[in-house]
Length: 56
Image 1 (spheres, helix red, strand yellow):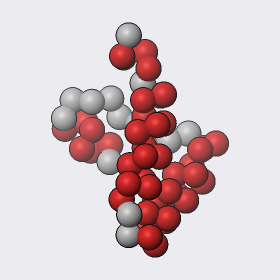
Image 2 (cartoon, one colour):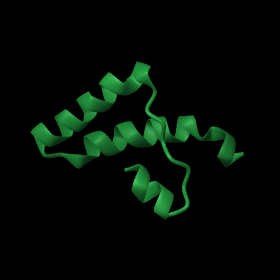
Image 3 (tube, one colour):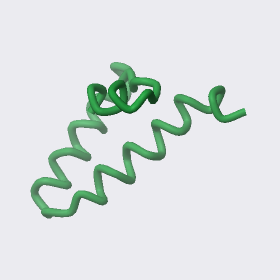
């Protein structure tokens, strides 16, 4: 994920320890339900929040 962000000149995403379990859960749920939007929704919400200062 970070490699793709880096190669496209976007800020990388540091998954802090306190949200790491929800990251794993989102990946697992997306895989089990075969629905990538579960992870994409999780990622977008947190990525935007983590990088708000770049959007201003």
